[in-house]
Image (cartoon, rainbow, N blue to C red; front, side, top):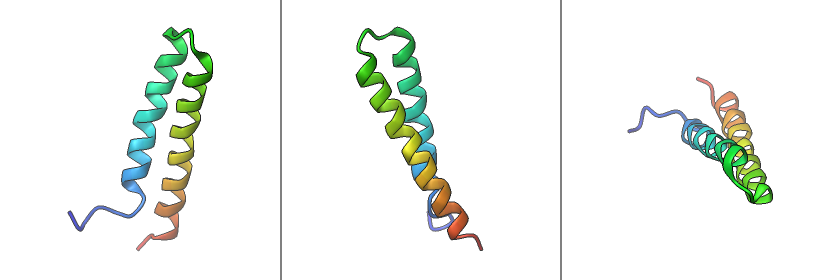
Amino acid sequence: MNNIREGLIPTVLGSAVTAAGYAMKQKSSNKMLANTIFGFGLAHIVLGAIDLVEHRR
């Protein structure tokens, strides 16, 4: 477990949340909630990527 790079978990989790938000945008009538989830996922991807770049070995 110690070999996982810092920032990898938020990036992967953000990808899953972004995909869920995108799927909701396609099916849901509540577009505001879908856009909120989509943006939340994108924010996690960006912040996780920043951590990955900052803590390179």
